[in-house]
Length: 356
Image 1 (cartoon, one colour):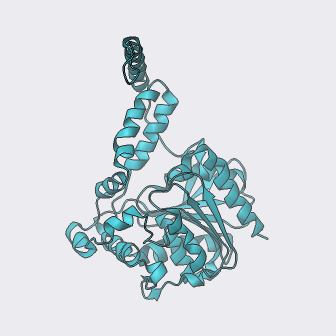
Image 2 (cartoon, rainbow, N blue to C red):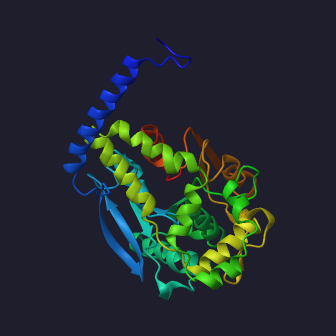
Image 3 (spheres, rainbow, N blue to C red):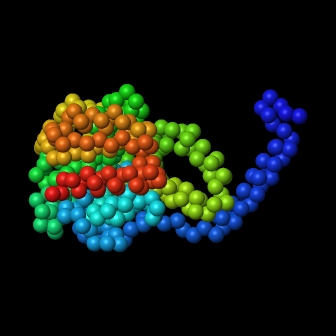
């Protein structure tokens, strides 16, 4: 007989059998898995400053773009999210279209990096990488792609050195940190950043990860692991899952002083909107971002809500402003099947029109 929820004895028995077979196959899958690696594209180190490294990526063909594209990622996670695996690589898509791609890898801050400031990250490291590319390619300016927090850095650098940035692409980049739907901002707005950093020094990666996971506690701490059972008999799907898990938990500590400044100037003071962002002795004015700007944001982004990114339109000084609203979330914009076609194509086509 069927009950109110339409359960039957036979149905439950069939489900139990299916689950037993799935778990049995899963044990065989896990037994035969090799170490899960990441990165799909050959790269070479071309410049270094301490723990910070600039890599050039090599595709199957010689780049046809006349201006190199430098990618600035966030400090919180590792930049290989944009080159996770062969069928999920924004870098690979850009290279296939002829772009000359470089990525700045911020490395893993240690105790000696405790007093690195935003000026170090933006002027010394990002600026050093830009100047290296300008010298190497004999150009006055390069193309810059800033992602998430790396987009904030890119905006600051472009405002302070507009002559060195030919075209600017921002991707899931927060600009207005006080939108009503910004849960992360709501959490840290009243944080005593001085007491926190003075106590812990460098901010432990585990603390940062816990905060991000608790933004969607059911989805990120339970549901995805329950869903893992359904793919245990699919080796490739399990490898993809583990590769993503490896990236999530491969998080560097945060240099304490830079963290303090970022929280206070952006999350708490909302400096891009209200003014007052200072990088060293210089104040940042987004009105000086006069080069062409392509702003890409994700419609279901829980970390950087769309309105937080859209604010750039009214603050940047450029007359050449383009937006792309991507149907997906903060991670899907890197790794979804749609992203592999839409994001590299949009960036390349937009840059190509401005390379003449």
